[in-house]
Amino acid sequence: MPGTNFIYTQLLRETCLYTIVGNKLKNKPYYQIGNFFIILGTNKYNVRVIAKRTLRDFWEKHADCEEQLKSWYRETEKSEWKNINELKNDYPSASILKDNPIVYNIKGNNYQLIVKFNFEYQICWIRFIGTHAEYDKIDANNI
Image (cartoon, rainbow, N blue to C red; front, side, top):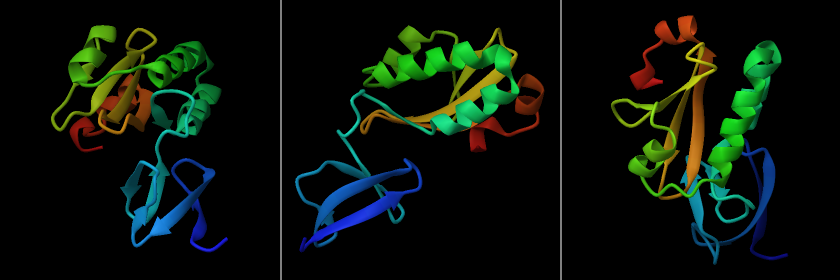
């Protein structure tokens, strides 16, 4: 098909079909990160959480937090937050750091989950998940 290309996005691990017109995607809302394009509106949920595999790998090692992480994932995917204040209404214990990384306490503060959220494009990037001791060793503002 002329003008049609496939790209495998490492971030989403799925094949996206798009039509190129110059450097733009024709009739598809998208978000570009480097050489990768995230096609918006292809998810049946409101928010794309990148990447569930990070959570899965963690709960396979720490089974006591699996249900809480799954619950957080489902709630975030279905959320319709337009700004940080709406997120804080649903998660009042979440901490907002400099440059807006969001820190969630998981399993009674035994684990920390750090995400970055782009409200305009409804994308949530998981930046860190670890024990509280591991969290204390990192610079959460620059992760």
